[in-house]
Length: 52
Image 1 (cartoon, rainbow, N blue to C red):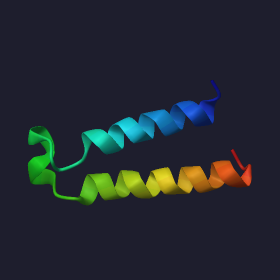
Image 2: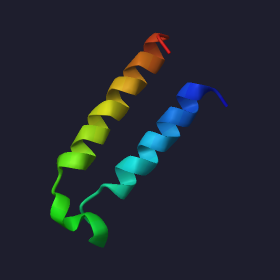
Image 3: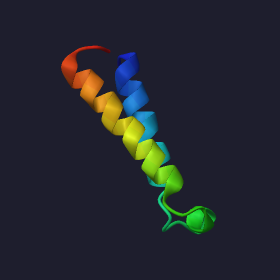
Image 4: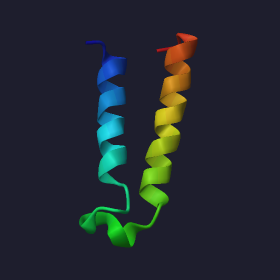
């Protein structure tokens, strides 16, 4: 596995864990999942452009 693949997997797991449906993150709102989602999209775009 390359480093970018590992980063994508970690970001996906963090995104799933930050979804407000889980009891531990219900009071957080959509902020954490939105931030991680944006990071995931940026990482995917960089990966598709070949910059990573």
